[in-house]
Length: 153
Image (cartoon, rainbow, N blue to C red; front, side):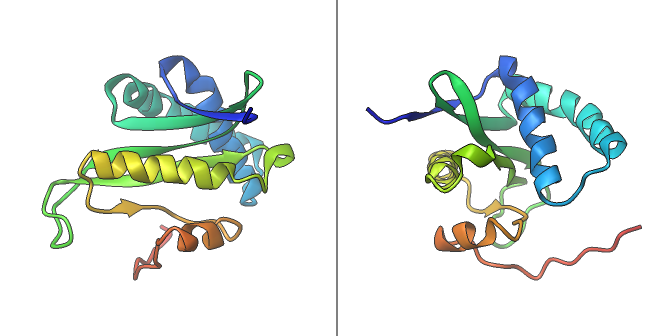
C-alpha cells in the first residue's frame, strides 16, 4: 500500500496551508518571526476566501493521517495577454514538504496533480516563483524561466 495520499484542501485546512506558507518562506531564508506573522495574518483572509470559493485550490499529501506536504494554485483576475486572452492568471504557491518526507516524490506528485487540474480547468499558463531547491523539479515538468523583473520599493 502506498504510504502517501494526495487530497484536495478544504476550508478546514486553512491552518495547515498557512503553516506550509510560513515554513516555505523560512526554508527560503526569510526567518524574521514578526514579518512571517504579518505575512500569515494578511494572507489568511485571502486564502480562507479562496478555499471557500475556489479561487485558491490546494492539495495536501498525507501519511498515516498526518499532512506532510502541500501546495496550491491561486487563480486571479488579471489582464489578458496574447499567450492567454482570458482575463485570469494562475500561480502555484505554498509548495512545502516537511524535511523528513523530502526526496520521496511528493512535490512532483503535487505538481502533477496541480498541472492536471489546470489543464482540466482550461488554463493556458501556470506561473510560479521557484526557490533554488525547487527549480530542477519545475524545469523537469516543463516550466521555463521568463523575463520577469522586480523593483523593491
